[in-house]
Image (cartoon, rainbow, N blue to C red; front, side, top):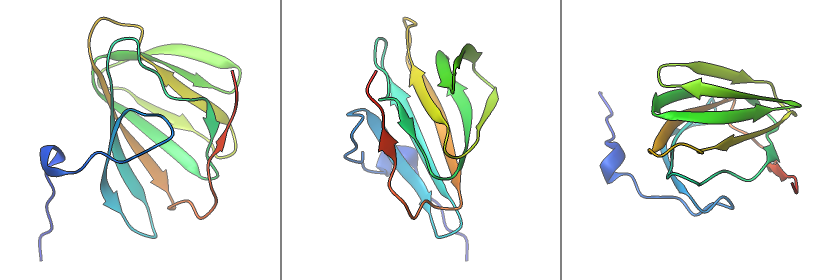
Length: 115
């Protein structure tokens, strides 16, 4: 059986970040979320209890992982190990859209860190 989902038909989740975040895939093995940040938007700094991979689908943004920040462009994958502070910032004039892959699906809550 082929299972499909369309991003446009996937509801926006309510998150602490207050941005457009949509879960496309959610099983005990992994979670795939698409996040869209408008110009000037950012996520809240946080620590995830599982490994995370980010893939930039559209635009350019700044990723913060641990003590490092780097500008990341479309078509780039970024790895973030579990239990490390990370965040995304859109300081460009265009939308930033990226895929978040968490594996396995977290069983503990994400920890938010004040700036």
